Image (tube, rainbow, N blue to C red; front, side, top):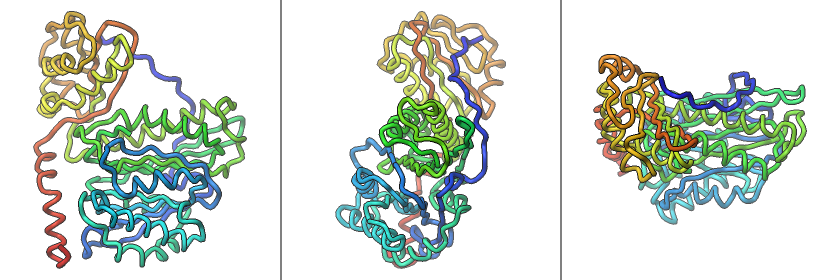
Length: 426
């Protein structure tokens, strides 16, 4: 059996419906603009609005090629009191030069005018094909309709509008009680391909009616992202558009949360819980994947050693292919451990599939292959790698690699171009 990794303290979280509008004082809406294809009718433009002043924090892609919306968000979020987020699917507005910046500004300006707020109080996010100009002429004339559709139950529509290759919307919300009074945190996310956030194409919008000090919100957001979205990978690609935004409007009755308030640790854990559940949904919905795998590394000398081993194994194409075939090939895992760059001793490495040991001290453990295959053929399983060198641990959520994933991604860009040519817009 594997050595159990200690689990973090669990708080009492009540899962509730409502997603990004579960928290008081938030509304959302979505409409169809035909952004990717003028003839399509699917929802592709979403709006999330706070009716009260907010503290807002964001984490964005570390890719040096950044989409226009990311660059604009990074400027606007410094101003404080963000009131709205407009987000679209079907076009990433990335690698579009000055025109891309102009289009992103046009979207925030149109929303600001309809809401009666300043342009810098509006954030913008986009997801879709890279390198194509935003069909802004189909977007800005519809903003009024988008604002009119705002609803306290509009989360489901908004979550559908930000989907690209996702097969299902991703939404999660919880209610938490602190000192006898409740507050809520909820969010929506999208992501199924280009997923290896290093804060792919991954978007997440979270709202809370807790009142949170901006400095504490920053700490809580960065910590939660590190323990959720930075621990998932589907294909090893970090997008140009990765964005996580957290808005706090204080509509609940709990006291202001600061760094050492009675509710601080509870809030941090609740925010982490929401992000982790949404992050797992992204992995489970990976483009045509068939397996959801948690890679656990324990017994490392340092946190960084544990991290690099987990990430290397989770990204290995050979490892992912073996999982797809239901093959418990621990040799592929240990070879990835060896080239990860972490400090390891081959003769100390133990590897487990589920609770069954496959390798002991760097050698085959003798567990019948048929028993190991039963684990790897399941749609969900855990791989544990014990380096037996220390006390540090790290985990990553990942997937297998299927033939269908390759087929799907082989034609995404050409399909989009073909759709435009059909309508005479290419």
